[in-house]
Length: 223
View 1 (tube, rainbow, N blue to C red):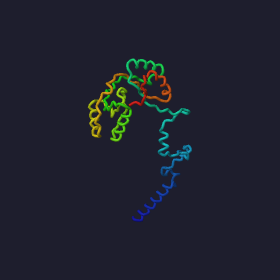
View 2 (view 1 turned 90 degrees about the vertical axis):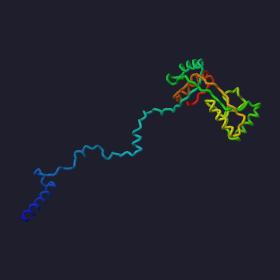
View 3 (view 1 turned 180 degrees about the horizontal axis):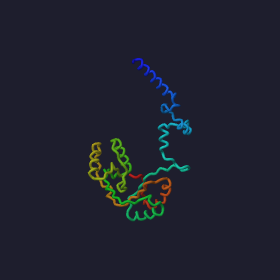
View 4 (view 1 turned 60 degrees about the horizontal axis):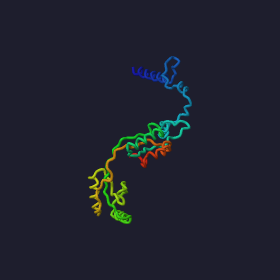
């Protein structure tokens, strides 16, 4: 019985070996082939395949610029004002005739009153220069006056409310400033402000046409 079992195992192993090596393929007995030569034959220039690194992949993700097109010029936001009703009317007429539609807007705006910590008036330019020197020595900042009727004098800062100005004056007093006072430099103003949201090189070249209607108000960066 044991001999029969051993002989059966030998025959089974021999049969498996012959099957696995394809020796019985002529009899329809063979393992399924794992090779796919037909797919290899369908490949087109497999040697040309190139794996992209991260930098190359980012470049491909960027939209292509049309051939021959120049890069877009940078733009900035400019504004000027406030303008009175009559000034805004004259300016609007010039804007309509000079600049592209949609490139500008005139907006109603209220500019708050302006309070300052004021020192002056001084009797002479020499006294004004002396006071400036004293303030620098005390490390107290000052600025030019907007209201020219207050010259010769100095402003130690401008504020939207009287309370803020009084707080600044008290702080200046701790630096030895004794002769300053709080003053309303300019009341609140109601008017219209010109805003050009995207001024590029082409549009900027046309802005000189507006100067007569800007009433001396310079264009500056939007805030």
